[in-house]
Length: 373
Image 1 (cartoon, rainbow, N blue to C red):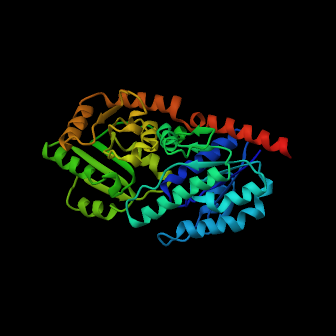
Image 2 (cartoon, helix red, strand yellow):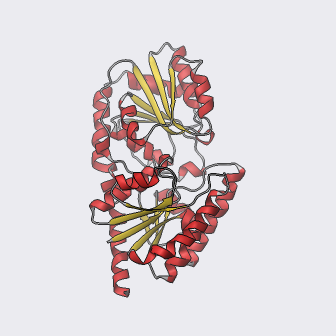
């Protein structure tokens, strides 16, 4: 069973590339031989090789706004040389324009994968939206064999816009629970956050919440890790606050250790159209680390359901309400609350669970492929 995944993710540097690698690892355990076609950045081949998969490198410009152009062109050139060896293909939406013609000519079943619409409001973001909408038009015109979406909210979004490509497979964010060690909740209270540190995520609210906690004479440390357009601002603020530690980007292998140093996590993500379509990857990783968490009360966080380890705060509430929730958690038995978060992650959030429907759909397409050959 041979699967090709064509993705625009930079596997050596993109925080979200854990999805491609983790899903591929889980599918391999189910018998798939996985090949990943991705930008040939430094260490990308080594990372894929170390995960036990095959790698095909393509070009993708580092210049803002040109990445999707060079990537699509390179995929279009490279794919015909290798396509006949595969049974089924997963195609990230960024690769649809470059891959669809070859896939149809060779009668290979393929699924368009949508893990995230563009999120930035800049000129570059608007250009990405044009490419996003174009990709879905092409996928529908070229009769993709189905789609793989990250959330039910995203599926509903495409249905309302008459873009849905059936059958739809929902593959929510998962986590490799075995890679995370639960925290022991010792010492000074540590509030953690890791991920994209962008203005679009209202990330500076973390510091404002910390300032309120400090004014209340709460003994705590706030640790923030990641990269994004607000990283430099956060680093400058860390010089002004002894309680603030901004680490910048961490290698993926260091993230479990970072989370294990925490007592609780916090994420004041705003409520807008983009984030309503999200699948809460970070929440699931934090649960795997046994961390209680305080989250904005928006669709993706609500999708986790009511849990004793989650406190939801309406995103438009005053920031002192977030500080109230931190104080509330600190006064409770964090060890037992965190243990429940870890248990839920093991039972519900592991990639083995979240990829089950994808595996079933890929098997169906492989069967159709065999029937036609």
